[in-house]
Image (cartoon, rainbow, N blue to C red; front, side):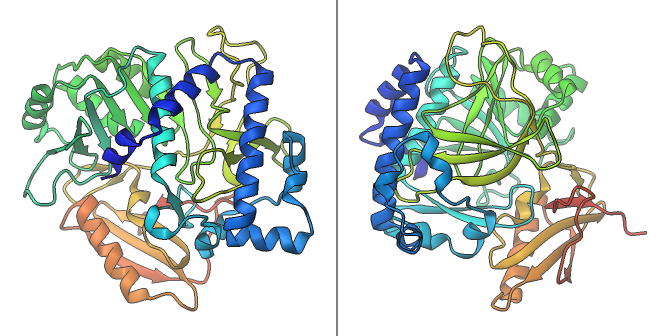
Length: 429
């Protein structure tokens, strides 16, 4: 349903026209566009979003007084806890006109957000614009490798075609040498133009193909959600042939950036306003703070993503676009788990992303096929429901036959950096 809404949204043509125009705009024109959108969204949020209605009333600030990017810091910074405990207070549309999404990122603190058909269509149009820089068609036949269960209604299914989306879905958790011949036959029959998904999942498939002496030429490899290593990028290019097209975003959809054909990594300023706030104690690192300019149903301003970047290149990008360059994004590196039967399980935090109602949660691998959920409940948490959902997630994504245990804590230990990791390997000695 969401795929059809994104492609059939009635204003999609106007969105694409605006995005094409903005990629040729000057820095001054981009700033003017951002400020127009910011003023309109603030006016709307101040009238329709309970959170901002209350904030403007209690602060005594007139939303009309925030007119330029220089005024933006007068608004409060939003933290993850706002979307963990009171997401509905940000809604400016009735819930029936939107759909919810959940994610823990890599932090172990599950947030809830809402998306509208318009915001989803705008996001797709922004991505399609980036794909066009590499010669990728607007609706390519895509081999999609993320966490999806190929088809729960077909026992042993390796793939699933998504009606209307031109996608062949392959589960990231069913990639192993024994399945490769049948899987490759289905993939070649589909004849993908691009491979799309998590770098860790795409690398797993690329490694299997390389070891089997196979290649799968495509127009491009589209990646997101993880930091890539040089070795991963080289393997993808060797097996799939096309360039690697990466983009950065979040479940909260507050900021977007991506690679260009000239090797730069650009902010997409018509998608959202990106602030880079200095990280205390570090002179060369900044935190990404985003203000989206497209989601009228769930307005957010100055949301702290927790993602950090290094210095941006000093020279302009050879591509000629005035979109600001972004430095190297630090984080989103996650251990791969191992199933009972030896299968690799990339981005295992997927099994906790819908465990809502908790203060904190972490999934730990104690041994291959042995997993422990570490839960920090609130006073209102339904632990029975949470544990049932957790077992269901493991069966769905990791496969049956895994051992699952639970530990109830009042606090989950942090890394030396102070961060909470959503997924860890802690051998049970």
